[in-house]
Image (cartoon, rainbow, N blue to C red; front, side):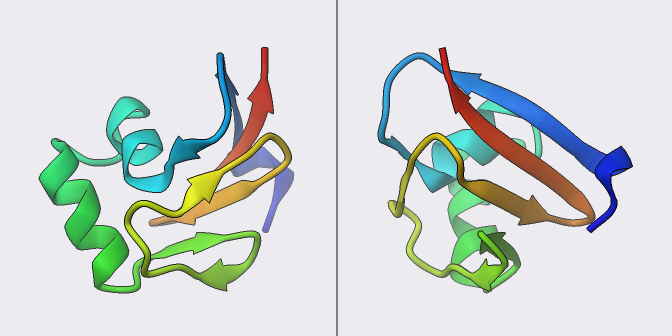
Length: 75
């Protein structure tokens, strides 16, 4: 994972559900599409494939999808 493709994502409260992060960061066109990506095993959390759509995401987590990496921080 290169540092040039890591984007910092600030959340206002934690936890937040995984599929919502993908949706709000425009990596998926809708919540339903985001759920499909997760369910199909296309998303990683902290380097592991995650298939739970409603997996809770906290500050410090790193989400990977389609060559993009999101570093989660809490405001």
